[in-house]
Length: 227
Image 1 (cartoon, rainbow, N blue to C red):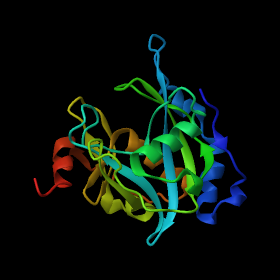
Image 2: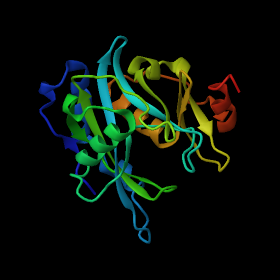
Image 3: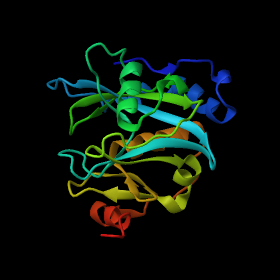
Image 4: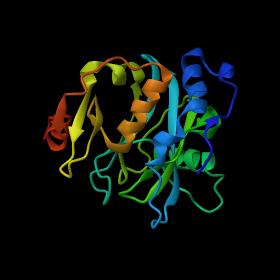
């Protein structure tokens, strides 16, 4: 498992991000041990880019909405990222390459600042390493391939932290986890779990109603009123 912690001195990032970068050093690996792959499973390495920048509404994070036409994870919100390719400087090279391919992010404008512990995603059998990065020179982003990505958006952290936009969702399988409402998007599953951790470690989280549990299909439809 890839080690975790800061890649730069936390003092060298904007003050609003320094607590998050420093906090990656002290993440309790035991929290993530249950998210390691089972002994009999061969997990594939993957990485995602948790890219934070300063937008017109304060610090924000880059997310993408997967196309409804995809065979897996269709219509879901995700961080840019994907599986490691041969020759990648994993995990940072993987995360930057995938972000460029999916959203048009220019790697030269991105500073990787920390690694978070790898998380196992059972549905895809990926062991995913989140790469935390500061977007010091933002440039326009877009859905590079509409067949794979329906939309790309910078979502303010204040919006995600707002209790009015937070609740729990229940999957038909019985799984219950945190979720966020964003314009035209329902963020749940792996992405919501990682955002929950980012908000908590970074000091942005405020109390919210964890007893508000909504059925996944109902919550999902509520973000797509045109349907």
